[in-house]
Image 1 (tube, rainbow, N blue to C red):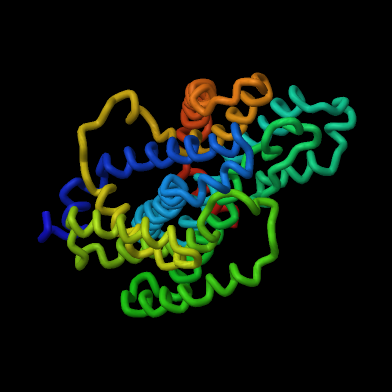
Image 2 (tube, rainbow, N blue to C red):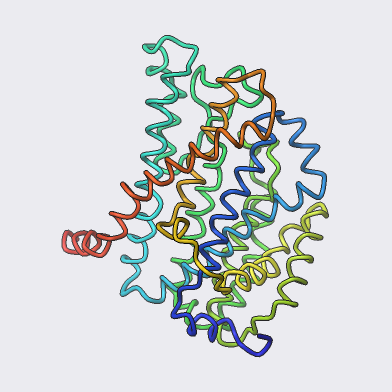
Length: 357
């Protein structure tokens, strides 16, 4: 175990290890459990929880998601025939399923639960701002929707979408200048980004997501790039469970310390890849599709719907019992009806785009 590199493990399993699939599902469910605190008990409770060890663990979920994405997307990038193909694949993976979820939340869910007359609801500026989520212009409120809930957010999970797009844009720029194929230059670029992104966050204006328990936003981009880096150096980095455990413990300590989360990227990315390159037996019902994106997209609106329908049932467990099965059904719908068909035909779609250009 200690002598095998990431690349050797990846090659031994032909680039398909079940560890990444299990990890995606685990992280998606972790986000649902984490969000239950603010949905059921409100922002003050969530802030107090954020100062505990539970809050520290929760702040590692999204960095792991982004590190996992960086490792796998780097492989996808290096296998594509052109940067246009890379961009097209990323757009097709993110936006169709996102557009469907946003439309269902705004047009169906919002219309059913809003306190406003429908004529007013569909003409309000907030309604149209919410539709902008389809293009990555994130806004998490709908007029008269969940106004009496502990939190008014319709879908706070969407706050990560712009940073995911930033990750893809940064990687596109690095690829365009040949940096991803020059390891030493990539390391130098990563050091520059490590300095610049915290500065960018420092001068960023306050946003609508203030108060949610999270790492500083552009920590996620650093984690993504660290995942990319481990893919680039996959043939030189040993995969070692002991080092992975130490890396996770270091990451946990860093997110407990104010302002130190920016340094979590390398250790959490290492721990994530170590876990992802494991290959436990596959459970057929879980591996019938990739349901993690759908779980991430649909969970928060269902959690909020539970609080709307049962305002006196302030139980985190009840919220999970309601939201998780409902979300799983819509994740299945998203994968079966939207994501999987697009992935199956994405090369033909990209070829059509290239022919049109």
